[in-house]
Image (cartoon, rainbow, N blue to C red; front, side):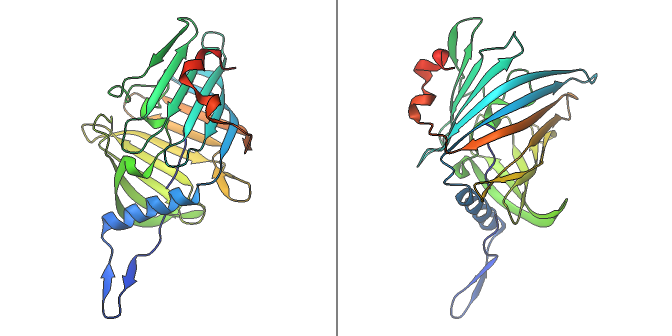
Length: 261
């Protein structure tokens, strides 16, 4: 869940006689591929998260969630979110199998109904648990999910960022395009803008408080998603990251979702 992956490699390459310039599309794809490659090899991780929902009036409510993520060779990551608080959502679980060109597989277990519900591939643009995150935001962002276009490099806080456009290849996406800011050193997704089906700005994601793990992998401490059209926002505060914990495929089975603790 909420996973982030994207980088610049070479703007020009030479033959013995000629120098060819990359197109903006080629350069954007190279950035995405290189950043994806940089994040490979983490194996698995667990974390705790506080999700704070804020409505248009500024009223807030919070939820405590445990996160488990498994890296899958040759496919997208598998992720599991387990809600522990408050009481009205305790025991709710969300399981995601991310893919490339194929729609993600997602299941939601609602303890009040004692039932596992499969999320339709045509309904991924809906809000997840009342938040400003959509179901399609929850899977790992595999390179194949988008086509790309490089826009520019610019300052982003203390870093310099590559700015690229991403166009969803998934035909049922709620977005026409996204603009992503990825820093040039640690490949951190610092900011992303999401444009709706009418091509209007819908949401902005801002990530911060990054920390490095295993001497290589960067993960955010905060992710704030603001919906500009509704006035709502959702703040995710991550903590207690642990990597290479021994998770396996058996920990991410839809058939046993209701029994997972």
